[in-house]
Image: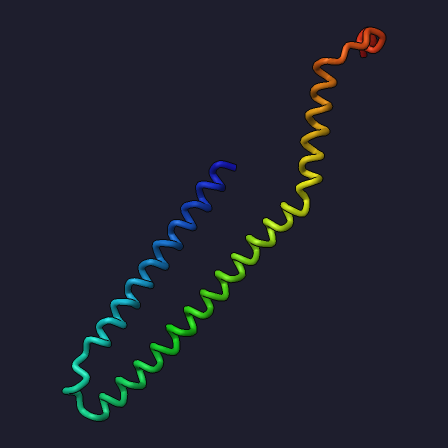
Length: 119
């Protein structure tokens, strides 16, 4: 079981490094694109520049809205988990109280007639 957990950790670490590499490469390409000398470009390249800039802006907006939606779902799941725990708090306390009482009775009660029975 330990090896499976280690393997999963390695896969998650690799995926994180891959995502970081893609993120950094993409950011570098966007920065290079926006550092081009727009004012000195021919008209057709300026039009192409604007088209590319609009496409980049749209895709950045789409990525961030998708990520925001995923974050909202994660937060909603966390709130749902917390609400379920709070809703079941009475039963959780009852389980602890029953276990406490049972352990107390087993450790402290002395009934000679019953203690004499051996299996």
